[in-house]
Length: 193
Image (tube, rainbow, N blue to C red; front, side, top):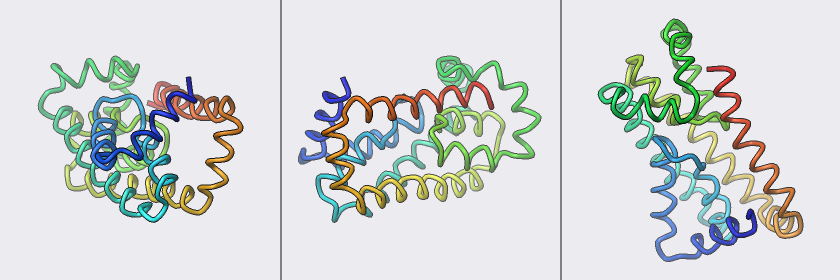
């Protein structure tokens, strides 16, 4: 399965509209889509390492735009859209706990969600629901998402050939690591939030 996903991502990385696929993934992942934009960012940087910084910047901006859309959902359409999304990710039952803590530690929650495998979409919707200052939310998101995507792009830029060989030789292990990180983010969300 991972080989097919990796093959699909490498095909999209070489596609003439790959840049726009990445932008769409980054935007959607910040709002509702379960897979992180990294699954396109990594093969796109592997395909053309010289584009690493441009791709990281596009991913960052699109993700923050998606995060702002998530904030709007939490703020203005919580019952219609936010609640079902948070229930889907198992975070709805923790909202009462978050209510008290979010006013004190909202920026920290956003920073953690922006940088780690914790599903950022949960943080964006919660930030709107708890009426976090939109300017603070956008600024912390920009810094956190920038750190994440520039780190990933930089690591692939520096170690791209090694990463590519590792994935090709150890597809099952690479898939296991990816799955553990992805599921670990959801588990961490359910546990912490």
